[in-house]
Length: 197
Image 1: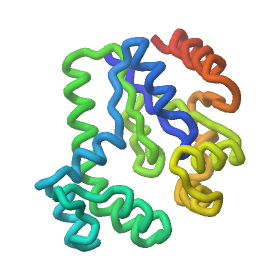
Image 2: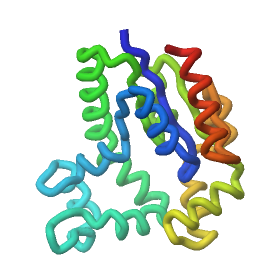
Image 3: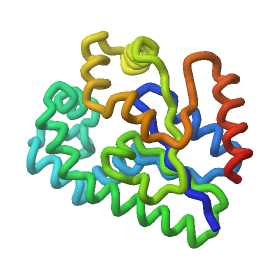
């Protein structure tokens, strides 16, 4: 029987790093960000939906979605972000659940749902437990500015679009603190894994 672990955390908190650690231990990862890219690939229903609402100016020369341009627009415009989520969430959810079912049928021992908006879209109901990666706000801003090469105001705005860290932590079954070193985080993850599988 597969164990389904939800993995979430704020933007730039270190979810992908935790997912890599879990993958190295044999976990099968279903990555919502990857699925979100899949559903807006050229000639998909998702891309048609996005272009019909936001316009062809968000297409690149090769017909693919200009994710950077669209991202900059929606993160500066809460209504547009909500609209984009509404257009794509049903497609993303259908694909995630399809991958989950296939992994369960293959009898994967540990399946990880790596989903930034896990609680917002209630994926916790498909999980045996939820792991939240957490960092202090200042560290999160710093890492996001560095990662995306953006200003402090832009980083704060992106963070503000998500559920608060306090609320996420309160809903978690286990919290991984990613304030210090990678080694420290790896120790926490491996210790937690021993308890669940």
